[in-house]
Image (cartoon, rainbow, N blue to C red; front, side, top):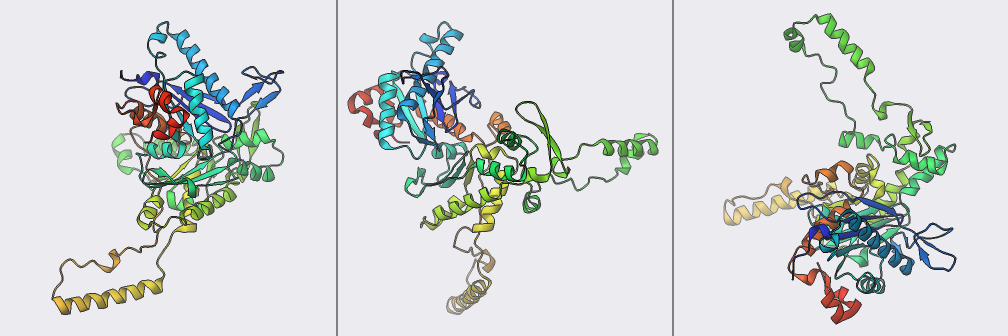
Length: 454
């Protein structure tokens, strides 16, 4: 079989409010998705789906779940046809190159049913007429963005819901997965309470602006957010002496620069943002509030999910790889605040009484061993014995350094990065067991989607 072209890969990540699309992947670098469209279609007067705007709007996905499979299939085909049109207009030879054989990877939500995925498989091969297709769970895509973590837990914070998905041995544990009906909109509700003069759209604009951030004191202390350099305010006497300039002149320049230095957002009692209509709006320190209930509920749900895992070593590994993604994570300080809440709620420290008792028993045991066997080399010191009940540590994985374009935009859509990485591995491999081919579909039908695995 001829190798599939990377510049022909089609990736679609449908969400409740927007759908991310990319056609073609670069050979050397992975770029953020180039297309973001609303996840909605329309019905005309005859009840047929249309791309033209009407009063009858259909949202095929709600809280990640497919609520109208027909509308969703229409949306996928509409995106595909738009890609074909755009590419053929850009290049006269596209039908002989990039458009001749398009592999399609669709990122799925854990709530999609088997029947829905089979219908999508049939739609891809029979209606869209494609020859290569794969479905990738969004949680698995998130883990691949951080280097294909074997054990982790994914916290995907959306607009109106949050998914808590544990992954063990590269497999999402759907039976333990939990969705809670709170997301970024809960922050909007609290901001509306403290800023009643702002409209709903202005509240959303505030939340998306640079002046809305999370700065609780415990995060300031623990993570050093907006922490000044320790040498701030110190005079470099040697530099003044060796400069040859008048000391008074240098000191005056320094004072003037400090006077005109722009203060950090956290130091201002009030700050200004512009809403979507261009209006300038000033708000006070309410812009640092509103997130508390959301992170508390997410932390509680995370603990309830993790309490179902009885494999201690893997549970420990999962706590050390807490992946935080989703649209709400664009807020400055949100990931740090959520991690601090997880630490506060779930970190386990050995009770002092148990520790003293264990150390005493260890001393007696070591003493008995020495009497029986003589000197015992390399006995572990007491302070090196780890308390076995997890979590004794909670961490978030480090974002890879080799995706500079992605590092600029943050973690919001990092799930798409994982899909890009896996797409190159799946369709760039000679082993067709990772995706459904036309031959497999002709043989097995829509059920062929269950014959492939990552």
